[in-house]
Length: 340
Ligand code: NDP
Image (cartoon, rainbow, N blue to C red; front, side):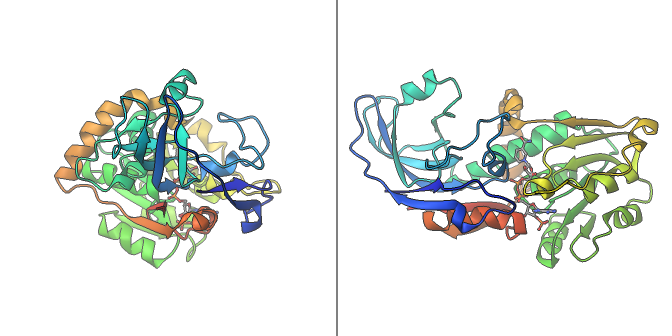
């Protein structure tokens, strides 16, 4: 079996040389263990944060060890009566093809190893549980409906709008009847966002003065900003915010590889006079919403109100590439790696 290890801590944008493909022997599962063959793994922007050696809400990745991340796999051998061969499971043991683990040990670790969860796919492709029906979908749902407290009439601005999280934010806001403005890089993403009903799309690569562009397409201002990017996008949102606008600070990907002083908004003073509320959040603190999320998403998908895109790299050797491509915007929708 093969796995991807972190070889060195990236400086700036990660490169191939920061990763290492290794081959390991995976024995038959021991007492109480199951063996899982991964079918799909996720690469996510937050993983960049774990590559720095610094304290954060998740511990840093260790050098020379397999990386971790969301994965969908299938049980191929089991010494645990709760898991049967053929079961589809969600875990945090991505970046490897096959692994043995004791479900009891995962439970005992109380979240430190993630969870091993059986999935009923309801006939949907299993990898959807790494995207729209998984962590990114939950992030969109909790961030928009709880953190930003979306209410009738709100004009919503979303950055990285064509990505895994952003595209779900746009669609939930649209199906609830809102005016939505999305920002993304390049004509393919613009066309996709228009196809899902986004009212105005800013191609920030074609027109980098996002402050001016947003002011143009939202002459009356915005009430909600779903922040994925930071920098000039945050400055634009502050500039166009109406009084009492709410900002859900989900991520600031433009700063994850920054080696110098990051570009911040120069107009933060407007937050005072406009009485803005800016709230950061981490999706893992909002899983009490999971039952509501699962119910609403199922209903919206059944009604044909939600769609999703995937960008797929083939084979574990391509996983570092898939990850690096996130920072060049080479994904439309969820970036995934197909294994097995
Ligand atoms: P995406 O699928 O949106 O992929 C990342 C996208 O970010 C790229 O496709 C690219 O789109 C855009 N991007 C990359 N670099 C830049 C840049 N320098 N300037 C502007 N845009 C850039 O990823 P996710 O949906 O998984 O994540 C989106 C955001 O949500 C990230 O900030 C992530 O960290 C955050 N997040 C936060 C969570 C939380 O709990 N708070 C949980 C999950 C995600 P484009 O071509 O448009 O530039």
